[in-house]
Image 1 (cartoon, helix red, strand yellow):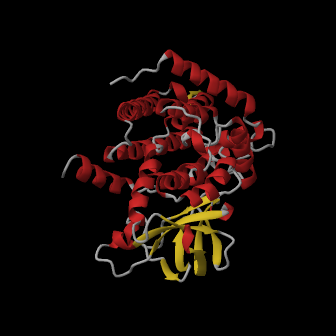
Image 2 (cartoon, rainbow, N blue to C red; image 1 turned 30 degrees about the horizontal axis):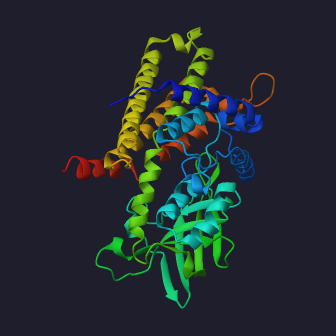
Image 3 (cartoon, rainbow, N blue to C red; image 1 turned 180 degrees about the vertical axis):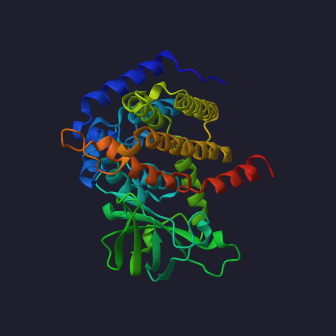
Length: 393
């Protein structure tokens, strides 16, 4: 097992870092680093910049506009983006839907959707969770009935991230309610969000932000040609897609950037007249988080080496990245709240009367990151997956 980067890979890292420094718009960087949400226009603007460079979909095959980079280069690319405060593109189109289309899509579906995803012409969102069907995704009830050359869809999706930005949505729907196993009656369908009968309603979170939504589908007519793979075989697609989602959930680069910001904050905040960073107990907590990030990075590198050698996606034990990565993110937000103290209250004014956007967003960020151990399959479910698929328990 080789956990070191070659000279060529180190040079590639420098190339990516220098390009980001010269091309990431300052206003977008500032919003990311100060925890301010990006509007749809900013995501699309950054997507267009990446597309012009040919870097919007580096993991795709070259025939569809990918870069031809190997798995290690793609990992470095993602890590440098996170370290620099460059926003990753929302994964629902470029990473998730595209991966499904490349694996299971028809030639017509690929021709219709992939170029527009690559260029950032369409904003995609994911329709998986429903009331009563989150971590237990196979319990979903949203119904799709085949009528001639189209499906009629009725039901609800919830916690739809950035659903209010969506141009298109991919959904898991139930096409056979009589199947013996719940997983056997599910299909994977693409829908234009402008279709009559689709209603998006905001869900305002504890941090006051509008990030997630509930979406209602009332007699929505969708062309049958928008079915991906086979009817009632959508669970196969869903499992494939969730593997892609969890591989990127370690977030090592983002956690390192957050830890550096936390250290800077602790160096400013005082306790008993001295910087908090000099407090032994707080330094111990920081060191523990740093060790966790190092361990997480080594684990990520181990999966990378496995994929590099075998060319195969990781197995069920990739859930380790999801579990520990989200726990580390939560640890950092907790320590940031401790470091900032009263200054972490939303919209705390600094001495000159302006708003300190960094500390004013710490409390909302802390609340928001409680979800990290739930999305992409709760950490409890991930532990069950490891126990069953890896440990054989």
